[in-house]
Length: 125
Image (cartoon, rainbow, N blue to C red):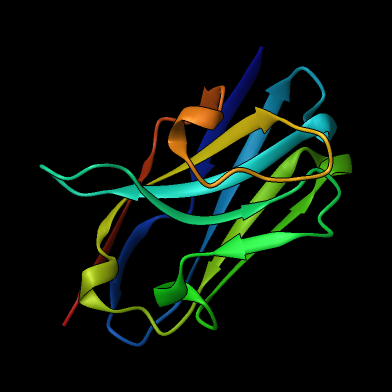
């Protein structure tokens, strides 16, 4: 079992930045790929970014490339999502997820085994 707890969400003006954290406990986080997803009411969970277990490989949704950066420190059992140049359309609940993997990462929610409870990000115009 892996338990995930997100933090760092909040209210920010358009153009601002937030840094989300995902703290993992339980089984070693080192072997797991990590992903960030977001969801708004009435919509499906949307892929944001993913990183493999070593941090050597990442993936982003096109609309977030250049604005968001995913990173992790497996020794600290922690991952982050740095979000810059935020837009009102980035408003959502953001979730981190962990999935056991080899050297790769996952972009589909169904590939992840563990989820955090989510943290609200609200971007005002």
